[in-house]
Image 1: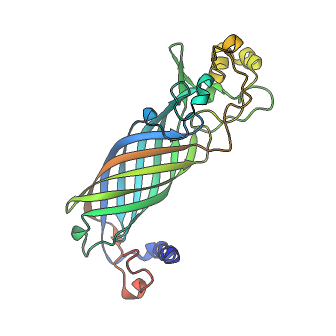
Image 2: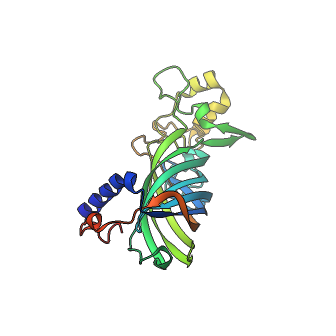
Length: 294
């Protein structure tokens, strides 16, 4: 089954340039609204109390009955704090916190788990699907202190701007791999409503500005001032003299961060001359791809 599916997707990719002269294509355009969350050093399990609103837009290209290509963008916010954490409650005295807006644009390859009935308007009433893709996103972790908003990457809370053996400043522009599942419900011949959950595997450990070790406190204070020193180490334990905890590790750089977007979406479909949908011949369809792509 897996080998058949991989073979059919390969044939699909190779056939896209010659999809050309078969029939007018179908496109869909829509909006989504839902919630965003994250998993990382301050919350390892997408805790509900840290969920924030998100919204997006998308365009679907229907090349085959079971394979869609979706261009999608979304904006959301992620946040977490040690003080309010429940899954990592042992870190509450570490007292780190952040929030960050996420702006993402990507391409998704959607695969419907049921073959479509003949003709687009006769498609299944309920259509479950899975997807995987590639996305580009921007983020910028921040924290409030004394009525002022600090961009934590510019502060360098792990010593990025200090002299010595510290990590380099991390990039606020990254790539991710979206993967998820959902289903669509046919409302009219040209309108679907659906819901999905999409996890984003990132290649950074700094969505929350926490990854490696604490910088030297005195060096941070001398070179960047008291606010930067506090943002780097706001630990507060009443049982420890001075309230500060001498943690050696601020985070764990081996565990990269994730974020997730769960949403309800509406899609309106229409015919277009911008591209041609592929109407498979018996030679291409064969027994290998029958029921998997078409």
